[in-house]
Length: 393
Image 1 (tube, helix red, strand yellow):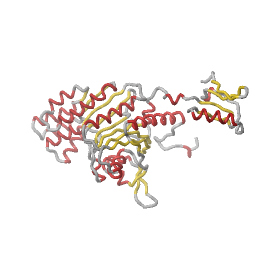
Image 2 (cartoon, rainbow, N blue to C red):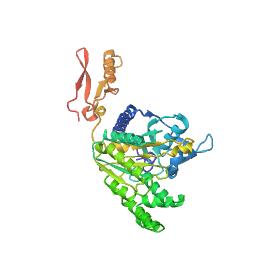
Image 3 (spheres, rainbow, N blue to C red):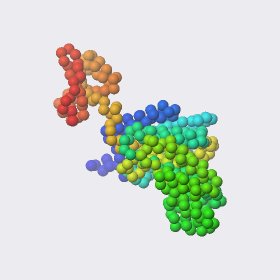
Image 4 (cartoon, rainbow, N blue to C red):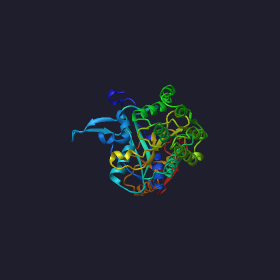
């Protein structure tokens, strides 16, 4: 291969078969979003860096490609995540007072692949709900997330549920400073029991018991009963437990396994409540992630309750083991005869019905079956007819 044709590391082409599958699944899931009342938006690929890294975008600083705008001289960023942009749209441009439902399907680019990924470029497909602080919004979002994945994936699905609000309640109960809270959250997220043990020595026995129990509150949903006992004296923790249980009840029939992890604090600097990850059997990294992030809009001048999820569309496509109905559409060979009005009318009719019709502009003989054709247009008497290719491979 000529060196000029080489792509950067962890950047790859999407060839026709996969590109078609990605596009079909994108349309199918966006249609599902739309019938649930979510409106499609498409924010720009590049923005001024300070805008991209506002709010939840702060965690993306190292993942964001930066360049200089030749028109303004300011630093631009190529988005590494769409969600902060959606929060900006709701807070700064739409200015709706009630509930706003938005969805999107856009590319993102990262300076390095995320853990478990093989590409720095991804297509994010997601939905966000703004303006409702109650658990009903989280239930709607998580049901939609599971339904979206289940509509195209037939392998077992596992969903991990956690809540940043529970750890935050413990932090408030312990009256931790911002610096102490950060150390506590980092140790808890890493399940670093040694660090948590050192940390707990500054507190009484009741507090020590809570601190050391949190990383062990992991397992099937029955662990929530243990959590209630352990956290009974921590104000606000019970609400977080109730929220996890409510979402579990809402989605349990459509997933194969549910794992509760009260030390799961991914994105704790911007998440404010439920955090969710979805795994498909055979895949090491999550196919979708979601959660509540109520405070993000403050950075854009308008704080609104918010919850949502993002699906990695290419990962989702790779997990599908059956062709979609549309992908099974007929591929038809037709001769190219521009002056034959009857043939042109036949081709037009087939295309309008959803068939793929390829006109043979070279007129060269080749094996239609091995090229994926299912039918051909041939002239029988005075009429053009459609004939199946029986030896299609």
